[in-house]
Image 1: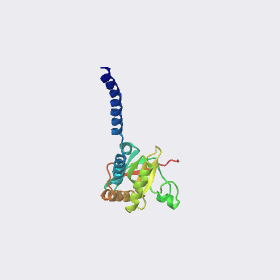
Image 2 (image 1 turned 30 degrees about the horizontal axis):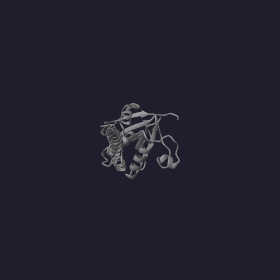
Image 3 (image 1 turned 60 degrees about the vertical axis):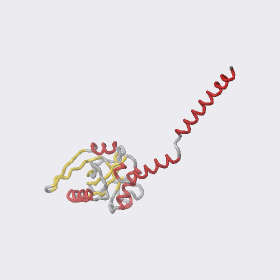
Image 4 (image 1 turned 90 degrees about the vertical axis):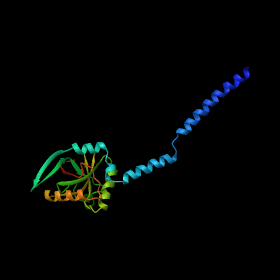
Length: 189
């Protein structure tokens, strides 16, 4: 009678080991799953500008800076005054390429995106330049947040015209609060 009992004792640990191994192997992610996740991420990046924005950046864009208004004829230009400066690295900005000073020469920036990662801002700036916005550039706040501007403009009337042009550009799929106008505040960095 002890023989069947001995077999039962040997069977239980072996069954437990086999069950644990099956569970461990069954939960292991495969290369196929990693590839699918990677491809999904790449598709999301290239689907449009709105995928680059996260909720923290969007909330910061809505609440940052000091609001201001200029009346231009029958129209009103609403903008924000914020501490930003151009990012000057490589050919990312027009001013960096031309060797100009670090401060923007024109007071109004038509901002079409805001990011926490510099890489994402560079990608959007390159995309804008390929769309024909030759003066697209990146600005950085002190937090840092990176703003991508389609253009910087000197006059309020021309700013309103460019703002309407950017809004009507179907290649740019912008979500509120973009496009927005920011005037860089004067501050030494």
